[in-house]
Image 1 (cartoon, rainbow over the protein chains, first blue to last red):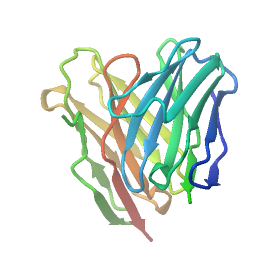
Image 2: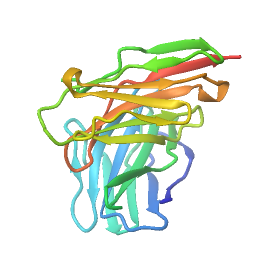
Image 3: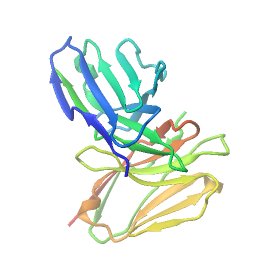
Image 4: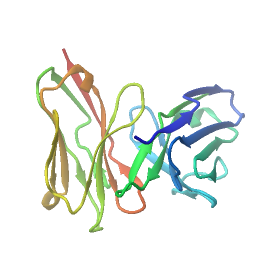
Length: 116
Length: 113
């Protein structure tokens, strides 16, 4: 089946630094990828929809300058948390859509971000 | 407004018991998709099922079964003869257009040996 690789699995950084998370579709091309955020013991909240070659569409309340999304190719989307602060600590998950005669979503394994 | 409601926050059962997870959704669209995902402690999301709004046929896959009722806007999930490995958080999700998923709050299932 289709595989979505997310890297890194976890990252610890100092407050004020920027962190980049990569989401790759390994064996298929994904024109659309999604970024979710999950706080401990809570549901996944959609942050933004990433479209290859165009600007990402952010959900209400998500700071686009804080969470930079780049979808430069059909197999790679990146989420950069800029000037991270402790409140940005969270679990971030990406997903990619694939049309298989019935569109399906495949999720990455997630990235745990801890900002000290 | 909450689009997907999973009223049960936590469910604890003893191994071999059946467990049913409730999911109620809200949408004005006639075409939509419903999903169930499993999130084990490791964090990744495991796809369990996708059902489109025109297919109300119930489905069984091994020990898993799903009951989709449009009349009550429900898409319930049952694990039969639960096992310890079933312990996880289970999410119900709704997609109305463009594959943006709205997730329910999740139900934590703990299966005790």
